[in-house]
Length: 79
Image (cartoon, rainbow, N blue to C red; front, side, top):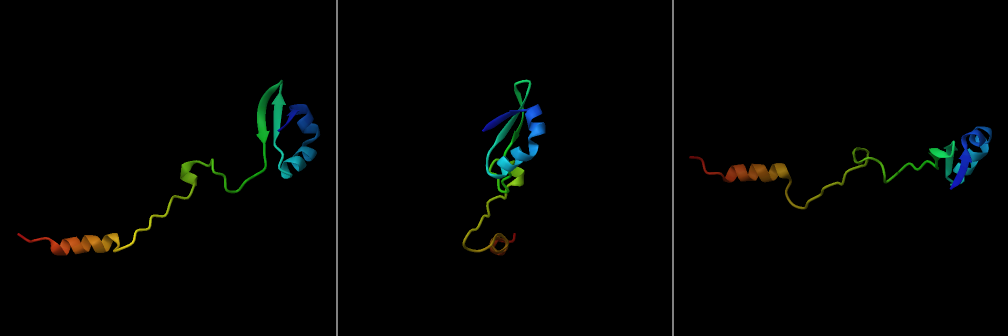
């Protein structure tokens, strides 16, 4: 990971973004403390919040839920 000061980042932004496009990560420091991390964009990130990820598709063999409920209702004894 490349580390650059904020001042250097401002002066070399175009070259640093070219490096990021090639897959490199850049850590921007201000007064020696990290303030930003620039990394290549990845469309399908696994660290996305759970509400943004697709949920698992549940598939079961056999009759559907509605058919099972209607079948059970048909078997109930009427008092």
